[in-house]
Length: 87
Image 1 (cartoon, rainbow, N blue to C red):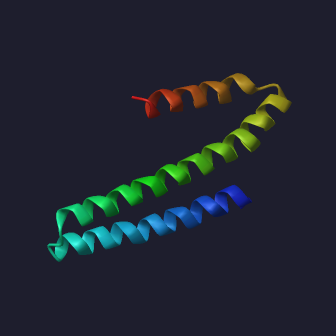
Image 2: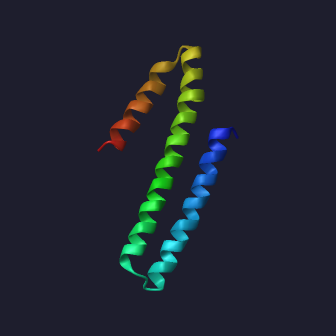
């Protein structure tokens, strides 16, 4: 596993812990604003992990496809992903 994937994994593990904390906060009937803040922090971690994975994809998978002369499929994948992300 390369460095970007390791960082993404650690980030997702942290997000997993935060999700568990949000569930506990809900079960304990904690203050809504505190819960919302925790959810926002978790969303930020998920975005960071996604960025790391996309960086890894561009720097390794897409780069390799370009070197192999098979870039169009990878480019289409990335463009489709971007379309889904900006909707």
